[in-house]
Length: 125
View: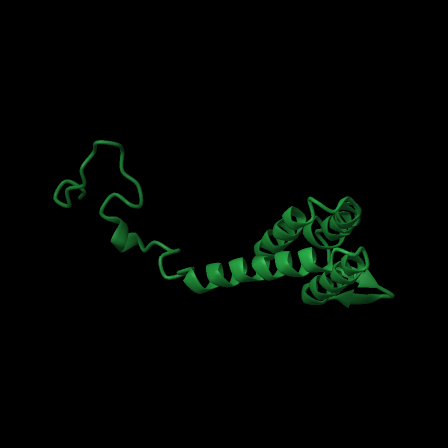
């Protein structure tokens, strides 16, 4: 979801000089908010539950096709390419090894200590 937000933000910035495209994009962003970002239950259509990835793909295709019909093709494609490159660079450079903290690695007092307080293993018993 965060990567989709980054790509949509880059496309939005690329459309600042095309007011018609920007209006269409804002309307589509409303659809994104309702159908993808702000919902708690899965999307149900004709008593079939639609998975999040299909909602993401569908909204992406519809948004791109409608925006391409507004004659801002070069700006849209360039900003979409820039957004995808930014997302790919972040995904390639992101390290997930250090997202978790072991209790043993945190020291004898746990994962926090007071400011100015030192951790002595002999006083922690």
